[in-house]
Length: 383
Ligand code: LLP
Image: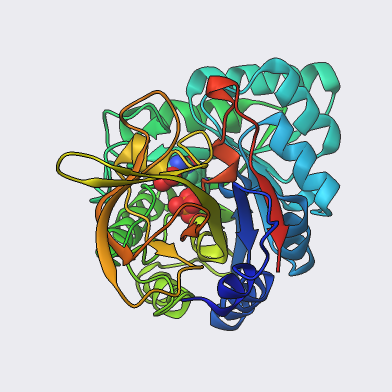
């Protein structure tokens, strides 16, 4: 068990459900990334969608990373946390005019455009503001990232990005517009990717695209390969810091960067997931006919990943001192059967009042919380 978490168990008045963030682990993760970056051409952006706790954002901004936003709201949060406008990129298939105007007026680093139709709107908004705008084209490379189908984004039938077939006309639109400046190409093939093979294939896809366009005289200042590096949900304490060196090494080895070309990453989960746990109190031990239920005061309104994706998170009883083990279904209080964090989970013998930690919840946890059933949003504490 994580030491910072076990210290929590001695606080009898802890208000739950609450996200606990191990800031020391966050710092060590950030340092590991900085040390693993193999060259000055590599630039890491943090994907805000994973977690927007102001304290976490400011730590990441202080480390010198850029920001990857998907809405006007996230652009503002990035600014408030200290990210420089020039280091903010903005992606998303449905940017509103107001959001585009915000990005233009703040002079953010780059719009990652997802369709030819959107490019035309960005060009028009840029003309109205009389400001030239940098855009990258999000290309849908049609690569299977072998992850959950809800979080694979680079397949041809996906709503994300511009298909290879339409890339030509998108490039023409940008190069002909006096209001758009072509910054580069953007890719993102999916999330929670645990093998390096999809990334090697992505590198090859990018190399052939670059060769093709170089022969037509089109060069890109930057390549953005998105995010997606996975984490170990089964054993969060075994290697809490993902193998960033192995990840960067794939790009260093297989991607043919042109002289002076920048390589951008948009990492979310791999930076913040392991430092967060959802801590909850046991409300009731309910003895069913065939199984025993642990009923928590946390539900899918606080952490939706198990209900939405069938995602596995390690569940621990951080307060029990019992040597005896038992098997439980760990569930929440919400009026939906999907409000289950885990079935047949072995825990030390558990009682009403015990504290339960649901681990690896720092990414896509609190940001996806909601108020269904009239519930309050979970709090946050930092250790
Ligand atoms: N860049 C783009 C364009 C993205 O769409 C995403 C994530 C990222 C970067 C960051 O990916 P990461 O490094 O965190 O894998 N709610 C889901 C994950 C959705 C990911 C959406 N896009 C979950 O809980 O697994």
